[in-house]
Image (cartoon, rainbow, N blue to C red; front, side, top):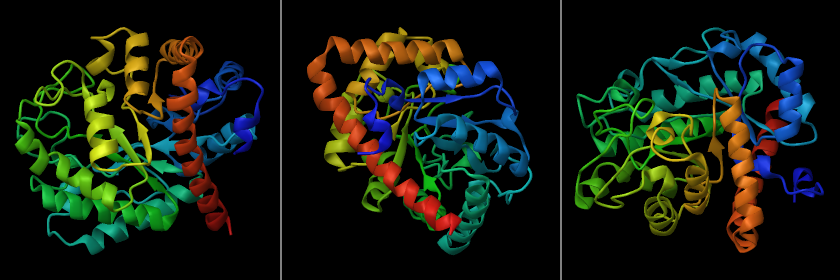
Length: 341
């Protein structure tokens, strides 16, 4: 058990991933981080575009939260989703990078990117995108996807993931079970994919199923409804989708993160306590609540109330989740030692 598990009070913040508003740690930032002790801090453009400057912010976060193992994560996909602009390789959009179907340059590009991220102090890159670009009217995926061919997406996506792993970075496949066939952006609304299960199996799910078989350690959910599987709840909140398909059917035993719970795809439709409870019961191991400090603090309180009001839930499901988090922490520690050596 890691040192972070040995505090006298339950570590409720270990299910919470947050962000910071600027390039420096203010007194208010420090007080808040010490209070919530999150599992992860996610970097955005407002935290700096230059890798060297961001490195100092990361060092400050780690010093502040020691001896906890806090993950530092970033969306550095390439193309139009790049938080850092200096000090790291700037990649083409994944569609361009993989247009020849050759996994070797994809692996090499990810390895170069990961090596630079690791030197800055980053642990997790929220990539590769494993969504299939199946709808030309999709406003949010498009050229972030490798292809409209699910077999090509799985092959090139895992080449990218393995390139990151080889460099010491934890990859995160997203957005399960697939955000490619939507006409709405889940940042702004709740999209629906009306495809039957037979289509979902051979299109949306295929890259994720192969990623699980290929050992991907981290997956992020989609704030998207799939009525053929669950007519009520979006994937992030759906036990049928996350527990039933990803965990049981595909056998995923790694860490599962929600997409940002501040996004309108869930935040505009469901009360926060419901989002938190449904996501954790669906086996999410981490809840991203970004760019909204009040909502992040409310999420922490909702986790505490859920666990204290349902002791069996705490003893069984949440402790299993902590075990998955600790296994990933062990991997990250080993990668840090390897990179620093």
